Image 1 (cartoon, protein in one colour):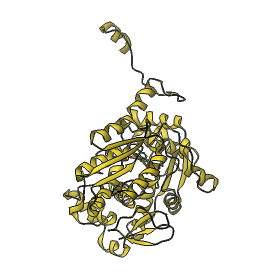
Image 2 (cartoon, helix red, strand yellow):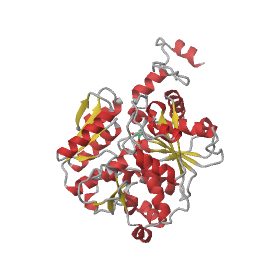
Image 3 (cartoon, helix red, strand yellow):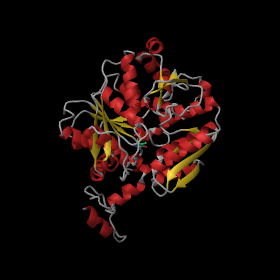
Image 4 (cartoon, protein in one colour):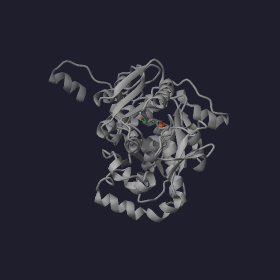
Length: 420
Ligand SMILES: *Cc1c(COP(=O)(O)O)cnc(C)c1O
């Protein structure tokens, strides 16, 4: 295992701290494919699933050799992963496709997929001997980091954009005891600042620019394959914000393909909110990458200058993938169906469903294909978005599927009138 620059291909050992290449570009973990080919198989992972011993009881560390082959004593795990894969008729009907599965990453320990990458990267922090960790966050990374830092006995520092973070996520950061710094500015400003801070002080950076975060998040794809008995679906659909997660899934599938565990790579569809769509614009118009000023109700993807855009585009090419955008109205309509199917997810997660619907309608996804949509975060992360939607109080959004609370006097007669 080494770290390699995605641009100039300079190499670095993994046991030295490095957030970027000397040339300034992004680093990624490169595994020894020859070793992996000999060591791993679907049988090995199925055996571990049956035994459930540490660290293989984690939906990340079960695939340890494919993720990060370090000594078990460094591993910090809650354990994460092992999330459900749902089939929901209501959502299928809404999207217009029969074979759709929802991979609910909101069922992770702190309520988002961030726990997978966090477990991996914080274990590296421990291996490297760090006592302090930091991240910039639209909310879920900070919630996850704060929890895992507690587990690891480390101090955590989060940089969040002032007044722009969903309530559930802020609550978690404070509750887990992270030093919470709200800056004047948006996520992109916070991201820039935290990189400077970590460069100058003895603090380990845990954003998805950290290549070990990406390694941990690959396990979402591995786990779905295992849940589908190692049958490869046609599509994976997921929201795109800082673009680490789709990068991770593409990398993971490509590696499985290279070692011969799968015989084709599923196509990737990355869905951006229209108000935070730099990847979509680049892909659609074939223009150079240009950052935007982000604005969307889906706060987890409200990112105008995504760190991993280069890795993301590369992964989309590997998989003959596509990029789509959806409006806030489409996100909240889709969310109403995800929620009312009894599953529920936060707004950003529902980009997947809104995007799936659009791609099926456009004929990009065939009605007969098998589709996995990733729900990235838990319903309760953003209670304001839910309640205000159902009360019809979201600016610029029609509450088409609202479930309004009923006001009445406290009497049986009044209740009977409403229920009958
Ligand atoms: C972080 C996050 C995203 C965006 O993932 P990226 O890897 O930044 O593209 C989407 N949804 C939720 C709920 C998230 O927490």
